[in-house]
Image 1: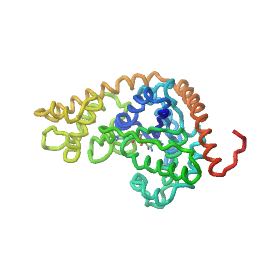
Image 2: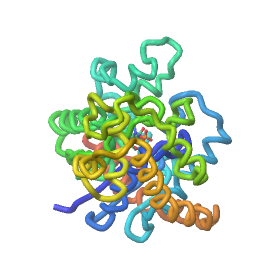
Image 3: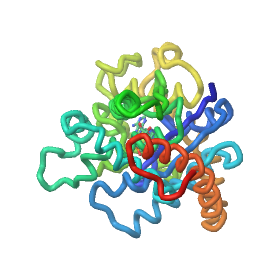
Length: 331
Ligand code: TYM
């Protein structure tokens, strides 16, 4: 069976070290292993909460460039913008008629984002169904994501299974790829919370394009604890363990092994090593980003959308036909 990888990132803010270590790094590694890889900039998802149209346009281009700067190669993977392939919204509608209000009400991200308030958009509620459509359109076999997307992936499988059972085998059930370490990089100023691009606190997150001195400052000021003992224990020592996890990921080592290597040293020494390692891993990304023009990026996105749409259209037609929508043209 072909290995088909799909994943997406919302252009809803500056991408963080969490997005990179939890997701984008896996995208780069998987483009070589997969027969097909699709990496989408999910702009439709970024409008489920109030947004500024100009900022959305800027972020859409920025995320696309960061995909490229991080090492995603448009010759090996398809990079495209979600709204350029209207089949995503079309299949989402169909799947909304398969999804149940009960299962969407149980989504923890929806609840965390204030799902109980009457003023949240209907789009925020149906967001996970659009995500399922993204994945199922490409007959995806593997979806690399951070830990926070796990429940959405379970819903995707449930919807695919229900559709296949009730209307015929159309969709493949995807597997989730969540890294053992790095699936949840924590905020630097509050290590009990996830590092998030939409969190108001700037000190808690490292932006991939932050200047070196700012990155250093954020890491050197990271909240730890008063014990001054280096040990990997995410429950009891979330701050120190988060720093060890970041260092381990960047260096390709294990956080427990690093903890031993640092034993007897103070938090200052650990932070210095983390800062140096992060600066080193982000430097080439920042350099490549600077050299990418809007024109070449837009060209890559156009070609990507053409390639993606050819596949998406085929799957959508099969699903629509099985569901009872008659096709305008015969395929
Ligand atoms: P988004 O834009 O919030 O995040 C993009 C990816 O980064 C991961 N991530 C993290 N990983 C580790 N530590 C963190 N602190 C951290 N913060 C974010 C996320 O888990 C994600 O993998 N709904 C998705 C986007 C999406 C999608 C899809 C993903 C839309 N359709 C289809 C996969 C397949 C989201 O909001 O990701």
